[in-house]
Image (cartoon, rainbow, N blue to C red; front, side, top):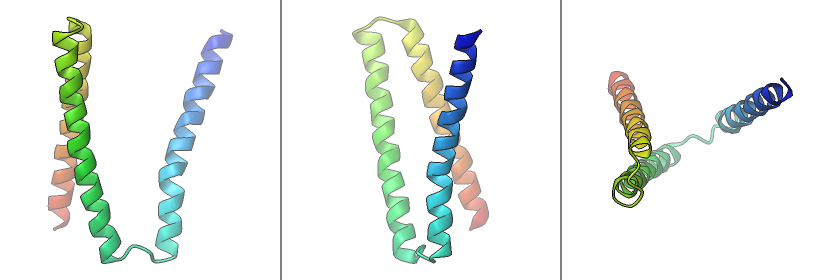
Length: 100
């Protein structure tokens, strides 16, 4: 029972840290009006490069899971990660197209 509560507190704490890491800097930057066109362009460009980089890492892990490790569990896990990755891209693209 103690391990469950420790794990639950860990994941709740991690979620709080992650949410605050994204929320508070953005709130601060909006208050200081630091979101100009240059920042937004660089931010979108950096996200695009990051997206292609993480897609490349997924493909390398996919290849390694089949060829080197011969593990179907790892293959299906990476497949689910890839599907989630591309679904989040599709949702983001739909939202971005809806705003324009």
